[in-house]
Length: 203
Ligand SMILES: N[C@@H](CCC(=O)N[C@@H](CS)C(=O)NCC(=O)O)C(=O)O
Image 1 (cartoon, rainbow, N blue to C red):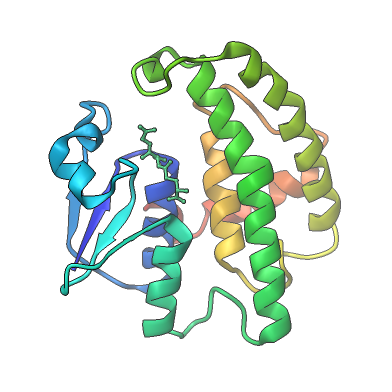
Image 2 (image 1 turned 180 degrees about the vertical axis):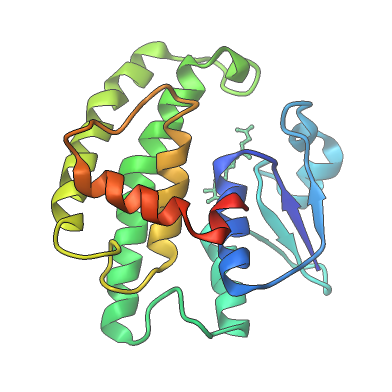
């Protein structure tokens, strides 16, 4: 088994944080995104979408999509559960994971990719107006999160889950995208501080 990782990029980090939370260690191969190694013929043979992370199993099966990779390990290592403990919790975790992925991680990513000069080679063409259009969407969703996080410790309840991992990675990714959580959003700030204090945050 081998995980194709991608340094500081947010999606591979989701998998690393998940594996760290679970205490799972697997062989890793770094794919140098800065050098565009993910666009090489060799890596395109692994993932034709030319994106990381990707997990290669011993039988040659390739699994891509960060959450699909985490789910694979969750079935093998069900304790402690990060995808919910019963039908209702699993649905709530799925709901928040998707909401955070679609309404926070994705818009932050659009902003970073379409404005940052370092992304000019990867995001072709860069569309600055699309980045700007996403800025208010980030704030709107953070407002929703702030209200929810006033009611409970983690985004799905009293237990840390994979939805919090997507939240941590998305919030951290705001920094290189030159965005910040407004001071007034005390609940998001408290949540971010708590997630950042977990040992897995350094993964
Ligand atoms: N939906 C995929 C997204 C994978 C993805 O977009 N990865 C980025 C790094 S965070 C990438 O490989 N980008 C390379 C590129 O855009 O050329 C997942 O959840 O893993």
